[in-house]
Amino acid sequence: MASSAISFLPMNVSLDIWLGIIRLILCGHKYLPCDLLDKIVKDFKKGDLSFAKIQESGQPELNLLIDDLTVREQEVLRSVSEGKPNKVIANEFDISEHTVKLHIHHIIVKLNVHNRTEAAIWYLSQNRNTTKQVIK
Image (cartoon, rainbow, N blue to C red; front, top):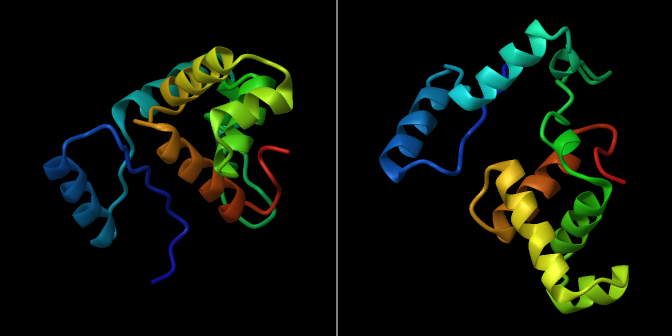
């Protein structure tokens, strides 16, 4: 079943709600969390149409959330997705482990995920599903 529609599956809801969303998506419906829709509407009212960018592949550009991360947070997220522990990340960027933990906390909040593993999965899925890399 080919479809150009995209749904967003939130990871911060109860299992019952999550399974209901999966059922909707499997039945061909679309799902968009209210907080994401609010952000899109707010950006639209300000004249920011970046959420509507379409790549050459026909897929929407999935950089809506990545733009909220600082360059350092993007670098830390890339390292987390490579499976590096905090101590290695701290040495790589010449920062303290505490600072790495703060960056990871900010990443988790901004991406609306529960932990570093979900953040890494999100990062890897963005880079796999897009024709041009979101984070370099």
